[in-house]
Length: 145
Length: 353
Image (cartoon, rainbow over the protein chains, first blue to last red):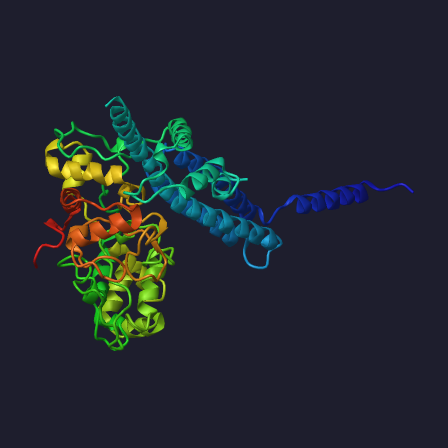
């Protein structure tokens, strides 16, 4: 059956309209916000690991940077939740991230507390080295006498 | 495994070596392992580990040394207090008014400034303030000055934001005993308050802008300009020799391991009574308090049991560092701590009203 030009044009218009509607992403702005928050979350998590290692190696003079970064990490998770909205498909995944973030933050606090004590414990090496040196001096002086 | 996971795990070789060594440590004064060959090997191994980690050993230094040349902020574990952030002056003014407004308490008998007296030290002089019900509040009132620089709020650090801290204080039955909705109702009935809220927030008082106004004011309650902060930025004459010796001791003994950063504390949790009991055993773990303006805020500790700074320094040395400090050491550290008093509105904190 021959198709009239009008039918062909109508068919093409309908096809193009269908393609246009399929290509529209009404949630683009939301997804952008979520992706940005997720990027920040990942970046901050890597930054936290780096900051922990820096603090452990004694290259960080205080814990202010770690505290600020932890707050920013928590804030990125809140932004992710807000962008996703309640009842979204990503909700379960975001809650899994939240559990992970909570554990990370708990470990970081335990690390700070433990690291502070460990740094003070190292002071004993200097004290006992000094006592060892003094006791050796007295011991050998006694033997010579 | 993240960095924090590794260092908190039993697999960290440093933690294992540390634990083995720790079990053999004698108490100060007791003959210990130092004379045995095994003890010497242990000390050498641990000293090599120490060097490999580029940690500086903390040894006591002589108290008689000439003043150091200008130190830079980048080299010290403590940083100066910055100027307060730029906040809408209308919100700050409103927050200051709310801070002194007794309508923020249930029975209109007290305001925030009743316990946090800004004319003196931002806290109170009592070991325990009195609650709304007449009973003693179990924890000593901390100063509100520089509280905004802490990473968590309250003695136990359970509150994460200043807004949640403000709300918790309003809703605590011993402190203000009210609710946000009750405060909103009272303030909304006041035409002058409605005008001030409209000017600052574009609308009347509500559950969000009341804490926000309080927090906006609280963020301005910082005390820059202490003598120690001036020394940090290069004023070599800001500290005397004794005060500088006190700072060196503060670092070498290990006080600075917890009391560091811009607020000289306030950025980590720690348990107290590590070696010996310090104060009331509960709560066991505290958010490390700031030492800013510490000379102006007796009594000390979470239960207010140390009446003087001298007493507090001795007890902390023993409880947290297992160090029995000499009178000279305590005097030097107290002299240093007195240099941490900053200025609020042009006057030193703690000055008589």
